[in-house]
Structure formats: structure tokens, C-alpha cells
Amino acid sequence: METYGAKVIPSPSDTTDVGKMILSENPNTGGSLGCAISEAIEVAVKSPNCRYVLGSVLNHVLLHQSVIGLETKSAMDKYGIKPDIIVGCAGGGSNLGGLISPFMADRIHGKSNTRFIAVEPASCPSLTRGRYALDFGDTGQTTPLIRMYTLGSGFLPFPNHAGGLRYHGMSPIISKLYHDGYISAKSYIQSDVFDAAAKFAKCEGILPAPESAHAIKGAIDEAIKCKETGEEKTILFGLTGTGYFDLSAYQSYNEGNMSDYVPTDEDLQKGFDTLPKL
Image (cartoon, rainbow, N blue to C red):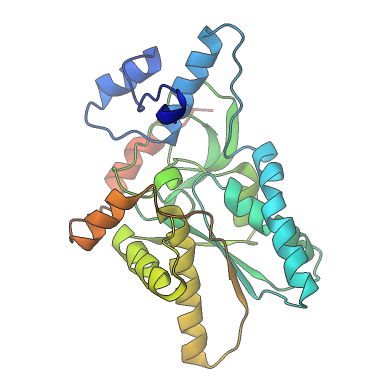
């Protein structure tokens, strides 16, 4: 971005009021998507002729992302393939929602028995350990309240390589589908995710993004189950990006320096304590 003339400021920063507040309360934080959203909104509000459009979590983003699922379903229909299992990485949920939405319609209407699996980082487990509640979509609590699975807008995940999956909440659509039992969820520590990424790179010649590697890990586990039971299933997963912007993460993995921090119940409670008292 800077090569093309942009100015990039890592979040949280001391260039915004909300960034200063976050840093004063958590001076060693590595930030999160929620922090960045808060700062971006503040900059947009204070800058003339500037608008900020949320690019994750909200329903309109899932609508834009649905082109992924529509193209995937069209390709599978062309070859007469029906997926038994669909696996996607989940942070804010827009990517997963875009992939599964055309297939989910058939499941809801009883036309298929496809299983949907959301895979999230164990360091930021909003579905597997979060609460279904009304919460803010950003750390600075500037957005409207959203009903979603959340760890609390005040939850700041431990710095790791899960990228855009490091978000305290989950899309309201994904949250509702999960709450109603249409989606299951799994969480993995990052070293296991990178193990799967390395296997995939050696087999396919593609170095996956850390976010995508979560879906790969989930797909591998489901394939192993089929191998053990002798079942034949078609498993579809979303390869959402390559890892060439994440070479430092792979270096950490290859050198054995990768940490696998998982928040304790006490860590999560600090985030839950920031939920709005309604």
C-alpha cells in the first residue's frame, strides 16, 4: 500500500482518541479488528468528505461475499457434485457466510443434509466459547448494537497469526444459523493450523494464508474421520487467500517459535464484563 503512496498506520495508534484510550488501558496489546474499526470510524467522522463502510461482519458484506458461494455452487452443479460437508474459516463471518449461503438455502428448505463447519482460532473463540448477546461491533463501542456471538467488545485477543479472524464477535447471520443448529463450530491452536498449512503446501504447491489454513485443518480432520469409518464424503472448503504476505508467520512456525496461547475462563470474563447492561 505504501508503495502506491498510501500512509499506513498500525492500530491501535496514538493518532486517534480511541486509539490512545485503548493503548492507555492495554499498552502491550497487539490490537484487533475491533480496534482498527474504532479508529477508522473516528477518522472518517472527523475528516471532511470521508465515509467509512464496514467491510466485515455486517449483513451487506455477506451479500457481497456471496459471489464466492454462487460461483462455487454453479461449478459444482455443472459437474453434478453435491457437497456433504462445507468448511470455512470464521472471524467476523462474512467470508464463511458468502461461501455457504447458496448451499444453506437448500439445507433450510430440506433439500439437502449438508453439514456446515465454521473454524475459528482457539485464541479468539467467539462461537465455541462466546455468548449470544447484543454487543458493539468495535472496541471503542461506537457502532450500533449487534445481536451476535461475542467475547465482548472489550476482549483483546493475544497476538498471533490468525489475521482477520482475530475479532471479538461474529456476523449476526452466522450467529443466528449457529444458534439454530444449522452450523457447527471448531477451534484450533495455531501450531496445528500451520501443520495443516504445511501439508497443504507440499501437496498442492500453494502456501495458504493463516486464515485459510483454519479451514484446511477442519477439512483434513473431516477427511481423516471418513478414512477411519470408511465413508465416502465430498468435502468443500474455502481457500480464501495465499500466505505470501505472512512469511514471518511461516518463519516463526518453521523455527519452532510459535506460541499456542488459549484464553482462560478468567480472560474471557474480562471481555464478557464489557457487554452492555441491558
